[in-house]
Amino acid sequence: MTAKGRDTKPHVGIYGRRNVGKSSLINALVGQDIAIVSDIAGTTTDPVKKSIEVHGLGPLIFIDTAGIDDTGELGQLRIKKSMAALKLIDLAILVLSDNRFDSFEAELVKEFGVLDIPFILVHNKSDVNPLTPSIREEIRNRTGKEITEYSALHSEEYNSELLRVIKNAMPATAMKSRGLIGDLVSQGDIVLLITPIDIEAPEGRLILPQVQVIRDILDNDCTAIVLKEREVDAFLRRTGIKPALAITDSQVFLKADASIPRDIPLTSFSIVLARQKGDFEEYLKGTPKIGELKDGDRILLLESCTHNVSCDDIGRVKIPRWITNFTGKNLEFDNVAGLDSFPRPIEDYALVIQCGGCMVTHRQLVNRLKEPKKHSIPVTNYGMAIAYVHGIFNRATEPFTGKTEKAGDLL
Image 1 (cartoon, rainbow, N blue to C red):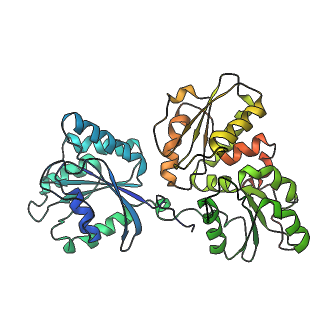
Image 2: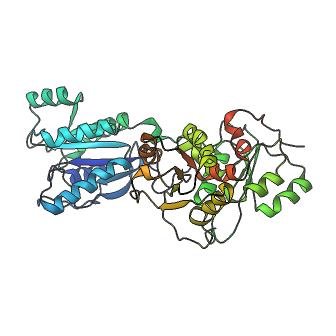
Image 3: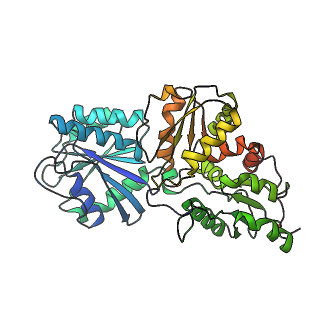
């Protein structure tokens, strides 16, 4: 299991009307006053993320949202933000109270279905106004779900059952990430990591994809050797070590391709992450579309995090330059950081290029790509696109397509 970044933990969205006790439920579950609670309707305005360790579940990120029945112009904006947060979550908790399940709840359940979001129903304040048998049956008929009774005021009596329901409803893919390289190596193998230290490298540390891969190597009882690109040739010549796999930063693909013998599988950090989190088959199909780009085509580059942009930024400078040089076409490029909305209608783009996604969850990344796929717009990945324009796409993807035999440990 790979190390999880700050926002790659499972996300749980808390939804419901104003004053049903959404914030109280979060506080009661974790035994801390982390969400503001008030009798005044509409206390929670914008969706608020809280990273919490929940007994029996591990680290989760709860998203406390505004009431779905908010009113007025500001209220509609709050609802819009709450609905936008649906694309971030792995599981939804719809909180009810006072035996109410009407159009607000029904529309939200419908939206859960459209976005394929698992959800549970919780009836809060059951110590004051228990759920009636008739309402329970009506809710079961309308949603196909059982409803869990709860009281935030007396949470010690209800928490164990609610936690059991949450655990059972949480998708397995959210609780345990697919490994990065476990199926490519065996116990005791040596994995060579090529990590340039340049203007884009953070001061005093490695970037998150490199850290995640190192952790996965250790989890699979293998040995990681980390080198800068200019040290690879001398290291291989001096030691005689033949790694089972080499993984490089995408921007030095050409140097790595020249340095790593052909019988050693070679790929990039971005491609490894693409297989774990993205739609790998769609990337494989979409990448060759780079060769079909025409003058005037517009390309959208999606970064899943925000960072300081350097003068030679990989997504904003290098990839556009490499693609332009490769195609010889006059192209337009747009960049989006984080999970912000697209700057233009998706139909305006001839190609979408997604980063590795080290800072987001699998569901968030998949949801990000639903719109271009819906409109049959080809999608690819930073590492695959870089490999393609440098003429080494087949080699960079061979470790995952079964075309290359795994090398041994020593020459």
